[in-house]
Image 1 (cartoon, rainbow, N blue to C red):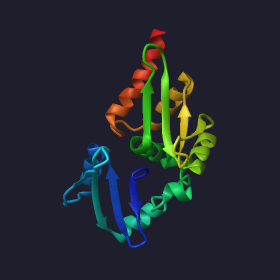
Image 2 (cartoon, one colour):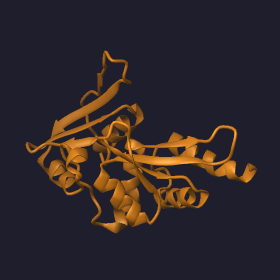
Image 3 (cartoon, rainbow, N blue to C red):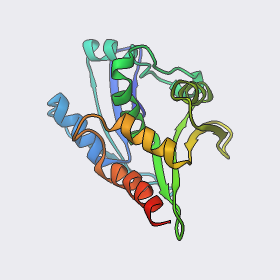
Image 4 (cartoon, rainbow, N blue to C red):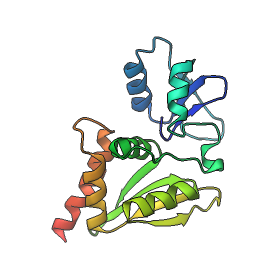
Length: 182
């Protein structure tokens, strides 16, 4: 929900992602009995998977975490409760983050796509990373490159076993292992 969720002013809750596994996980956690809708695009984009429903209680709770319509455009982000921040950041990374392994050499890149205020606040809060404008000029990347910062990020977000997408965790582990070779 941190990256790919949305709550409207009418208690309408939507979770839509290109990651079917995330939507299935969210559906199971909510014990949602409806179908997962597949949304296809003619422009060649990856299919999106969506569940949506109305829940005043969940909508109210999610709004406190800046899960609102137009979050990127408005710059809204969540930073209040430090005890939940690592899990929130992991959810955001699973939705709007990526990890790239350098081919043929050690290291890589971990980044999160965000609004400028969120990327800047993240950089300042974690005291690492660089904020770079995306070529679309409507969003920004928070990026980390160094082994030390990638290890710190990994340790920060993977504190709870079994939480997060396995393939993204494995990609960061692959980046970290590459440093041992070179």
